[in-house]
Amino acid sequence: MPERMLKFVATPQAMPDKRPAAERRRDFDEIYANYAREKAAEQAARCSQCGVPFCQIHCPLHNNIPDWLKLTAEGRLEEAYELSSATNNFPEICGRICPQDRLCEGNCVIEKGFESVTIGSVEKFITDTAWNQGWVQPIKPRRERPESVGIVGAGPAGLAAAEQLRRKGYQVTIYDRYDRVGGLLIYGIPNFKLEKDIVQRREKLLRESKVTFELNCEVGRDVTMDQLRARHAAVLIATGVYKARDIAAPGVGVKGIVAALDYLTASNRNGLGDKVADFDSGALNAKGKNVVVIGGGDTAMDCVRTAVRQGAKSVKCLYRRDRANMPGSQREVKHAEEEGVEFVWLTSPQGFLGKDHVSHVRSVRIHLGMPDSTGRQTPQEIPNSHVNIHADLVLKALGFDPEDLPALLKAPDLGVTGWGTLKIDWKSMMTNLDSVFAAGDIVRGASLVVWAVRDGRDAAERIHTYLTTKAPLAKLDGAVAIAAE
Image 1 (cartoon, rainbow, N blue to C red):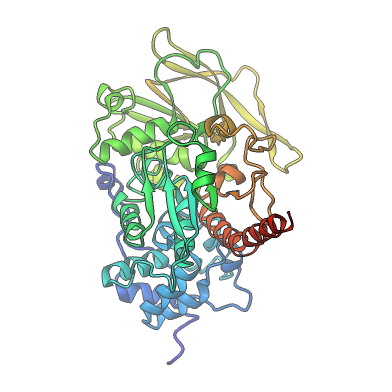
Image 2 (image 1 turned 120 degrees about the vertical axis):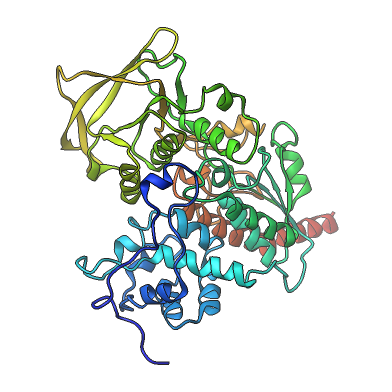
């Protein structure tokens, strides 16, 4: 096979075709088209095949990126898919929603004058091609194991763990309090980033792989943790974090100020065809309104871009730091600006005006002072710089904290950290309750989907180790003790 790589000098970086902003403002379809096969091979060939692949090092899953780029460049797409899916349960999802500009692509060693390889778009192309060609098949373990594992939470961590455990032959049941599979993938992320049929075909694949789903089932209400522990040889808690952070400011309780996830869930449910009363009434619908989103992460970007598509009169994003310090993807910021979102940098809300309904956000200008212990510059208010920003709908996108899981799951003995996340032994990923494991955001705190997939895969491996060593040994010790009596 002739050498096809190291073409970055002569071949410029090219993303898939992006729909014009004026067109994509009117719908929730994905904004990028797929690569043509030849274009994907051309862009993959830009990889320098460096000796130390920083793209792979800075990927939480340590995907074999240089290898599957080379296979793509050589037209060996089925092999590229096999290699890509060997380390990632959802490569087509990560290819769409991972912040590649902060992870793999942001650490590409190609000199920035030539720009990095478009890793995420190639990854998406490889797996979409695999689905279209029928290369993605249900799991058929070499042998079935009698042990069952219960997983609480049908988000990315739980789904990744379920797939890995099925590959080893375990009987897997996933419990989720919502009516659909996917967690934030289905209800928190808008279609223009991740269309819902992409998630639903993964659900279908897992069902065909004989993973059982118990939906509309809330642990602590419909089934107890003790019952799950009695029913399964091991239990994995992968609930994610859903408690929205709030603002302690005057007027925060007036109507028209809502949590970002409530807003996004209403929009996604409406798109899925559900009847959503608060959306129909306008309470969670931005149409014709002046919208202000508070926050600077990816959830804030999802909110502003959703509001644009719902026909908002104006959309502003307030963030207390500057663009360089924004935690969200810079690529998302650029998309939002193209679609007409106004970013109000170095601005912090101090209160909300309005008697029966919010009318203005009372804000103050900020300057960044000396770095704090984390190395980030400290936001400081500029005296006498207050301004009132007109708002009919305010969305609070300030991040998420864990819910009170010991109370929610009716498991008061379940250990938590000072931040409310579940406390685990990081070597075994087990909680303080024997045979109960935990993974994903409920352990790590609010993070990226790719980290949830990594944690789910790791938890599946730890559960397998437990069930093949410690659990059988415990039963053997018990049998010996009974015989001695």
